[in-house]
Image 1 (tube, rainbow, N blue to C red):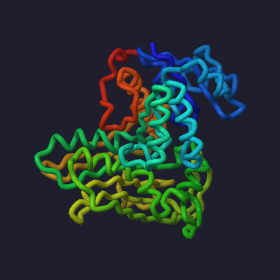
Image 2 (image 1 turned 90 degrees about the vertical axis):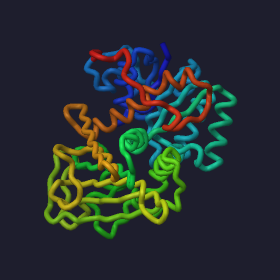
Image 3 (image 1 turned 180 degrees about the horizontal axis):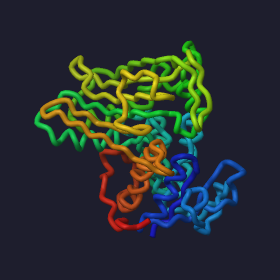
Length: 357
């Protein structure tokens, strides 16, 4: 079995612990945490498994890497600490580990990543013999392998559109929802997530990845952003109160332009309450969904609704993102050391896991 470490136990890390524990080819051997309050807690408790695994969480990175884990699921955040996240990832690769992570946006499309990032990773690969595969947390499969797979079912394809449609009142990330995305902030507040060039920085790699797979040249990548205020004050179960007149919904697109037309689009529609922007796309039911629409002949629409942790859709999205990464580990271990992307790593069936819980 492949000795595997989970580094970080937030929304993705919790799901990663469960995914590693369920995988017949992997063995969870360590859990790394930053929060002192989590040190010493059992991995099963941190992963929400309902039973202990006999693995105590630790903050001692040196000690864990010294054991030579064959794989590391790097689930620590890279949103506001991209340099630190890259340094951690390089460190693990240099120690010989296959690393899978959603933390470094620029490496979604590793061929077009900034040279300094690629060079740092490739140098670590050459030194330690590890590998790296980056896929998105929003989730990556919804913006690469799923739309590309579905596009192959049609006769003609005019537009590939990937949507994430969510009610963020269920998302247990207070700072991200209120300050990064801007929910509940005055309408003159500029949320960092939708500041000019940021959406392209985060999702542009997936646009380029799909363009490469579809065999088209991009003219450019464009962004559109729309925001709506709440008409009335609303109260949410997990996120507290949001006042009337503050931001209640945001919609943005990252568009791959081909021949002057937006042909490859990643769209996010996010609300803090269903009453805000009811004319925008809505999920079929519940808190949210991921949807792929292929405009062409025939027109194809596929909606994916994943739930986890008591029926939560945001947790379901995190779990599928973690699953895509964790389920790639044994393939990566068998492959040559290197830097991989979603077009390299196949999406495979859950062999050996049917009926396991």
